[in-house]
Image (tube, rainbow, N blue to C red; front, top):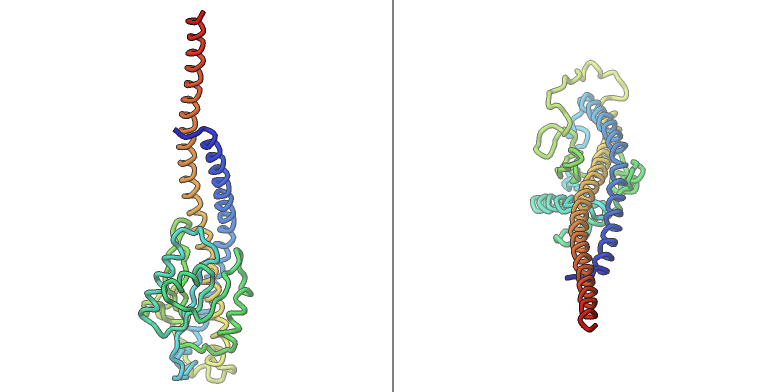
Amino acid sequence: MRNIYDLKREIQDLKNVRDVIATLERISASYIPALRSHLEILEEYAEGNRRIFRKLGAKQTDVQEDDDISQSLVVVFSTDHGLVGGLNSRLIERVVEHVRDNPKDHVIVFGEKGKDLMRISGIHPAAIFSALTDKPSIDELREFFDQFFSTSDIAYRRVTVLAPRFVSVLEQSVEPSVVWPVYSDHNGGVEAGHSGTVEEQPNEESYAFVDPSGKRVAEFLIARMVRLTMYEKALGAKLSEHAARMTAMADAGKSAGKIVSNLEHQYFKARQYTITKRLSEVFSAKQSLKLDL
């Protein structure tokens, strides 16, 4: 049977760990409401921008006619830190699948965990950026935008984001999302969030006298719209990270509590055994004294 002093010390250490776990859970939980509200507003705003772009009647093939553009860009949003369950592992699994099917794609990763897991999987990102802060702003993506979207043109035939998508606090899915071209999702259908109904297109001849033309306005909106959609995906990834960490810490706290309860049971059992043993020794000594007398 284990020493009661060792058990007591181990119990106290585990209680301290449980307190740290509970703190991490509360910290992540505190970010979720604000991020969720911000994301809902941003999704409506981003969809409004995409709807305006569609109503301009400008096709992407009309806006960008450069046949030399053949490369596609894949942007991966992971985390800098762990303790998020299997979120990063599931994300990198999807990245590996995508790269296997599209080996020529240009891969960029945000977050140290994603970088490490990708290199273990044999994928070498073309560029690496730090993960966003707990309450990210679009300015945190400025370095990335300046490097890859410095002009009004999109220098890639397709831009895909691979990032966790927030479904609920208990569920985060990992799905590829095509942010350019605007009309297509990863299944080749309409862009995610779009109802799929065909919108009435304006009669271009009726607006021929308008300056600037719809095409020129669309050209002006392209990079800004892609940046906004990219920020939308980054915000969803950060919300998913906090939700995954909160859930993981809640599960870890329950496991730690079970271990503490088991150790406390062992401690009280060992303590009872020690007390009983000492009482037996006292009674035996007293009985021996009586016999000697």
